Image 1 (tube, rainbow, N blue to C red):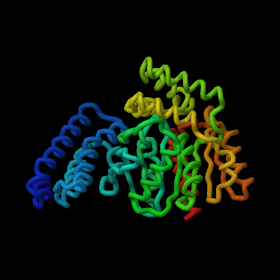
Image 2 (spheres, rainbow, N blue to C red):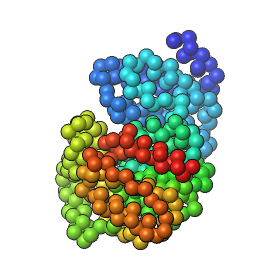
Image 3 (spheres, helix red, strand yellow):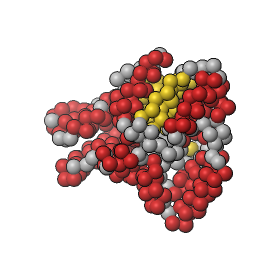
Image 4 (tube, rainbow, N blue to C red):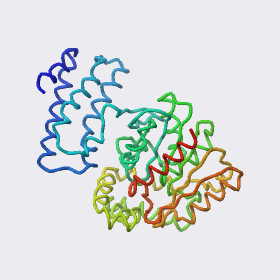
Length: 369
């Protein structure tokens, strides 16, 4: 292995050696961590954060005039591929780094993160709050066999900056449009869960020509009631006073269905890890944006694109009745919509049952393309 690894560095510019040495050290250190602790799949995905930042530095800082060898990114990926077979954990093989890209783009002055897997027609997956793009990765791993799956961190989540002011669906939709611009995509298939789904309504209102199809997961069309807005104000006050721990534990109870909590308790720890990475100010900004989101019942009647609706039978936030209302409104507007209900899933249905949700989305996307 040593000789093959040395060959991968042979064409590097002198200035790249330090960078790539750092990468080698990081990977070897993480290899030791895996052997010692036996990290879970989500943590294995998360441990590549350092590599993601280095890759983005190589790609994007060169746009600002810094010199970087064109073979830098390729050499980094080659070195990672050399090390991966030495790691005896099958979950790592899900990464398939040769087909995984980490990138950043800019929207309204904020630096935002996305990852992309596979190739084919473009699919954009928008996650709920307060998690990040990793929410969708198990689904993306299945869809990437036929589709180019683009999974961003919404602003204020994961590795994306929050920017100033409330994080509204208007901002999130504009971010999605900027992402398509950055990828030079005219249109895409979209799926969104919770706030990711609320963003789809705004995408339709502001840029319908960029929509190939829409899949709404646990994302009711109604705006907050006055009682719901008052509860969000209480939540904001508690976060500002006490921090995020109490809010996170409450979310783990209400957003993940009872069945998933019982069958797959590890998902609670995985979700908690993502939530703990979201800064308190971002959680406040999201709650402010959710309270201000417009009613989308009328918008649903204007939809003129193929639509898929997915409801969780254990979801108290966007109930099956709410999602059936969405389906009816789309159909009342004269356009078809398919309705799917997963009886033993909660608000985080794609995270709880990724294989089933991926099958639903694959069937829907295949029918559109």
